Amino acid sequence: MIRIELDEPTLARTRIATSPLWEVLTSLFVLQRHPKEAPWPYTAWARHARRVLDEVPATGPARLLTVGLPAPDFLSPLPTSAAPTLADQLAELRATPAEVIAEQIPRYYDPDDLPGWLGPFVTDRRAALDRLADGIEAYWDAAIAPWWPAMRAALDEEVLHRARALAAHGPDALLADLHERVRWEKPVLTLVKPSEQQFTAVDQRLLLIPLIFSQGALICATDHPKIIAVSYQARGAVVLAEGGPSSAPRTTPATDRLAVLVGRGRAQVLRALTRPATTAGLAATLGLAPSTVSEQLSALLTAGVVHRRRVGRRVLYGLEPAGVVALVQLIGDEPASASA
Image (cartoon, rainbow, N blue to C red; front, side, top):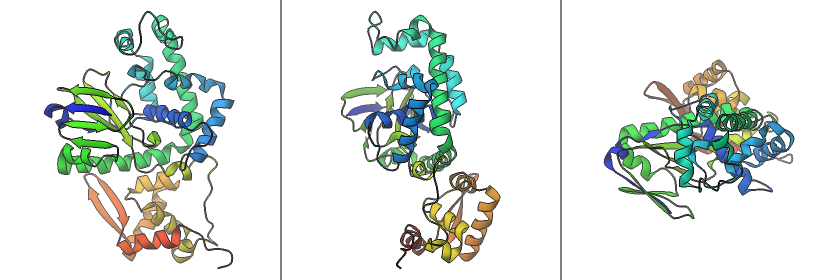
């Protein structure tokens, strides 16, 4: 168990942010935990990612992120804004000051007896950081970027959902419903993990980072002097099974009963709306133009099978009523059999 005692100022400063760099880190953890075959919905993505690591030499340095565990946080710095790009985070990684490296390494290793992979970050810092950043960028471009638009849309919806809960009910309610392996018994936040650690956060900020690649794993980063960060599994990991360069529709209009009933475009939107989403989020997830999605939503709204609710500056769409959810699940998930 990892137990984190949070004082009131830290709890009151709870924030949520996404992190492409942490997605890279946890995606490598998925490959490491499942050397032969990753479970669904990571299966197809993992096969592709392994080919990338085997066939694209430029990705090699990215493996350093999981070579030595635990590892200093400077190798995967915290997001400094709510939704940084990978380029933003890699620029921060490349610019890591020598004093930050010198401060963090002794928490994990004897500075006089560093492992070979870590030594260059002390002896030739700029070159080592550039190699790592270049490797991460090459890995991202080939292994994650094809899935990123759908991932980003799912993460946007996750952040919106959590931010709404935080604003409406406060951090206590948010932490109590974060993840099945995160327990909140004020003032202690417990992460259910094999290791035994305990931290106290005094006058800091709690940063929550939802991750598509978490696969239920939880990361706790405590090296930053003002922030304690905790990752958790975001909803929407199914996009890894549905997106990417080799994906194809699971059903065709001829065999898709929901498409036969309402049309292929509206069937796509209805399936995606089993989880509330914005127009932009749906467009990114489905690979359609926003105008096309907007047209389909307008028709579904008129038919009364979709509702629209404003949350701050954004508009979320969802299925309405419960019978439509059942229709999507019972008719839309499986194509009609050839003998039906």
